[in-house]
Image (tube, rainbow, N blue to C red):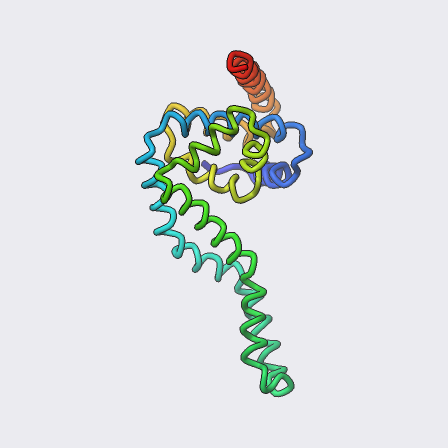
Length: 207
């Protein structure tokens, strides 16, 4: 679904700002829906989805290279111009320069592969353990599930959870994407209130 640039801009700003009130209200609801979905999904499905993400991970590198093409061009131009001055360490300096350009992407890719591997090697138990802790208000697992690496894992593994819960998750996300529109923001806030009451009720019943 395509969204107006203004909505995309708002989404980027809000997602990057953990102090935004609407995002702070939306995120716990999304994670609660996701964790319920994980608990309702067969471990085999979670495992296969993690394996698929591991297998397709190298396919993202052409896009990463294209995204960094300007930085690479500047690095190569500087290396070419300063080649004689850098001798005999020119090749080493070039290698370190390329590593610096791709360091963040390498880190994120390795982090994601580690998390997918944990899901795969534990046959989904790692993700179930994380979600059980989140639903049980385990402070450590509640915090860990909101870190950037786990948020990315949640975003991709949402495609594997039970359709009942993935549909709910997508509905909340689409309302959030459209929250620049007053009627959509109002609808989202009403929905968040309903989910919050449901979450509080479940917490009270489990206490």
